[in-house]
Image (cartoon, rainbow over all chains, first blue to last red; front, side, top):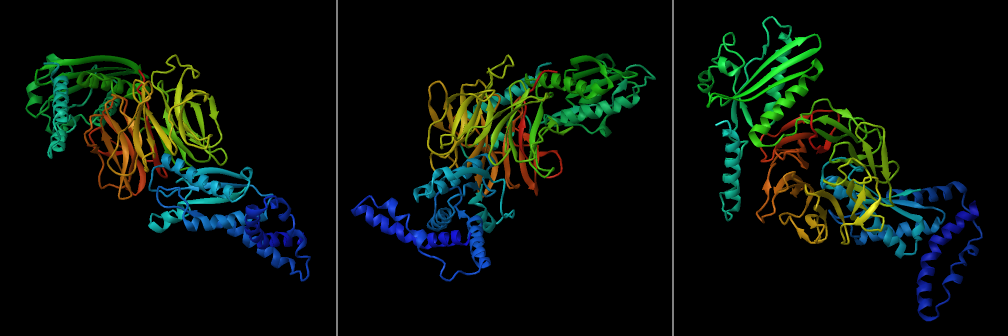
Length: 174
Length: 449
């Protein structure tokens, strides 16, 4: 269990570095992609293993961040903002760290539109998020999308702040 | 002269057409409002109903029946009921028929129409004589005798009202129609169905999740709607009275159903047709389906959202919402030629189109300043008419089967409620009150009595 955790942590730290290496490598040599990704497990052989609870806490925090950090959108838009893309990069990292996990991407809207069109808009938001993750390498078979339109606001108030919070792609573990 | 009012309504329509066909002018809207039939209401008198025979046990029933008659005719918004305190007529001497009515007593107080009613009751059996008079001409216009049970009082009154409205407008009205709506009083959005005047609302679905978009089949026997059995929207086709139904559960969204008029009139679901938005290809498009959900063909083709189809009464065209121009607007597609025209240009958010049963107009929700209002637009290129204004958020218009009224939802009281108004935007009032909030009303077709 502890060992697996370290592998995961190592992946978080090493994989982004490897990804840049790979992209350099593929430009010159090509074939190295598959071999490089198999290396990380050797790296941290628990030289100074922290206590389990701290590791669990870190894992729990990462999981909570994955679930609670939403991708936000402008009114009547399914376009990913630079901030939204940063959030999705963190999602991709967590998904890479948790390869067995499948998720549902839910698209949501604020109350101002009308319910039917918002149902469609919510799906387009979820699809934008899904497409971005697939582009970064997450397997599409792990990602399902749905839409709740304006039916499940996070903040029921009628204010700019609430609306901004409610226009979102939200992740749920399946 | 018996045709006076029908003529008056026809004349109003002619003037209206003349105004509509004229080149746009600044005062056009005011003239439009001035001549429609709901602004100049017809003064109507309805004296107390009487027992058909002296000493009849019907005494209690007469008051109840008259009240029902008043409520039902007032609902139509065509009439101005004259206050009974002004009536000169002596109920002791005047009768129910032409010979025993002094029409001058009615014209003098401004009444142009008069309804009399006689009721007799034996046990549970009820008999009723209802008449409509043109007081100006001093002539009988309608006379009907009905037999039924005491429980049928409302039905009998509605039947007669249907005759009255047919006489005035040439249309049977909506007196045997219902209104489906969404209410969240149970903690979930469920579909409820009430009579056209808001009476007797009852719960129709028990999905215990999100339930939306009720749509009536042309024969009023089936209701299609959207629900979330798990975590995504599917379509359900449910019989109005029987425990029968079908699920349409393609991958992705299955939303916004609309039954095609003139299809499957033999009552077979296989022959009936629906338009609905499906997204199983990854793109939201409107498809034509059988009543059981089998895909017949795709009706739209554009990347992005295509939702909320509504059929022309002849079933040859659909209006729908698309964001192909960058924001949601209403488009019309002719299914035979494949031609698509954009209908709405004013504003950046126009959704929820509803095709009028006469075919000449589309009502929709248009957003300005973050709030929706109800608009009506024709196909003549003239700007839309705004029917609601400065009164909360107004959404989801749906026409009465005769096209004279529109039901919609509004937040003008705070919580979302179902309201009705005339097709010209006058006489806006609440239809019914239920716990929670009510949205998404859909007026059923009018079936025969």
